[in-house]
Length: 371
Image (cartoon, rainbow, N blue to C red; front, side, top):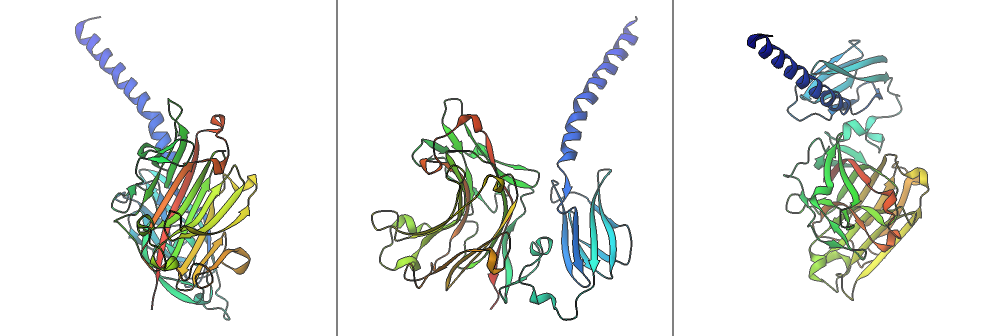
């Protein structure tokens, strides 16, 4: 073999190895991309949003519809489109990205004459990310949201890397990541056996007094830990005492404790020292609660706190806590949002054989009442 032939053979082999090494990565990346819904049903005149999850906000996505005249389609952003139901029928909305097509089946039904769209207190999942909504007969405007296509540090900061609770657990920044359009906290033990987890907080990025909080999450089951979605003000650290919850509180929208099979909802006020006051209510959940997505609606207003799980009618109301009856008034100062997981004896003994486990948050949306 001459020198020229040998050089061509080496170059060909290198290119082949490069192609082989790249192929699995591309397949894996493509598998993470999907439409935010595989199928939806809307009524004539209703407008909803559909997005392609797992791509950046600058991704060039082409949206089309298979049967024209059933829905109108308009790109709001490259990775988001808005659909409006025009007439009864079924069609398919397609998102084309880098040569691949991702589909959502859309069914349009007739709007009942005796029901106006504003009568429905439950906004659709797709619509609620981008429009004002009606809840409990009142109108709310979107004030903060994150769909977790990236970990947007203009909206969040990491919870401090510090010791947590009584099992030697630590919050670590490395336990936070974005996977398939979800914010993910990985709960594990590191090489020296330290239990590690993490969290993010909207401190200095977003805080508000009163509001409607909506989030979608999924959690995996393990002993020795719990997952949380909570609102917090630094005034609790200052130990404000004497005015009940009005001068600051910690609002635990939920703490999910697999080892204790508990889903806890709490309000804490009057600081964290000897004057600490707490009201907590619990429900028990079974094993099938885990590895499944759930939606939470939490209303905090001048009257108190109400939590709805997987629905917004009265049968899904789990927590109805009056500020006048408990705490001498509802919290009346701005609070940050916190998403976290931590290890502690509340969750029981740690079982390292169950780890790692994960806490997935699909989105967080916050609304402010429109006067």
